[in-house]
Image (cartoon, rainbow, N blue to C red):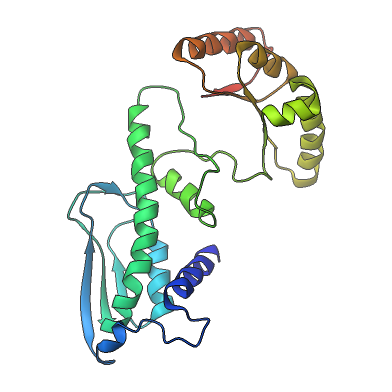
Length: 252
């Protein structure tokens, strides 16, 4: 699975298993039969993410270590709460702890930050989306963390949705031409896979937004619009919706 692959990569990075080196040389200062108990807490309020990764890290380092994760992904956890405990080989616990924490801190940080902005949007119809600006190799996990924090996933990669930007528009000749070409590809892909392929256009003006909507874009990303311009964009889309000229959603 992806988690086991990523954990293996992270452990190889830390322990240099692929060479002739001996792994965690500092842990070897401790007797091989020494046992220990460990408790990991959070120092701040957070939204937790990473339960399966913790279990996988310790499983790969030493499956005899007993690990108990006391919280679930998506749980809101108060500062100083215990996240997980581990008991068994002292060497194994010391070797595994940092890799496990690196994953958990990164993903819980993503989930916690997401939850903060989701709370800011309470009472509105606005949905918080993520992007492709992720740590290479960790996209699926970071997007999962966004879901744990109450956000929603945008496209996963370049393969599952169109996002037509300025350079694509210039190469195609116009927004309308780019959308029409995308519709042909999207229809073919949908017939082959049974899955819809969304078409989104990034626009830099009200005029471009109008063209994108009339061309049939399903999503319109208004790029760096000021607040007054965002208000105009919302009104424009409402007018198109009213006369059934659009089913587009607007992203800011």
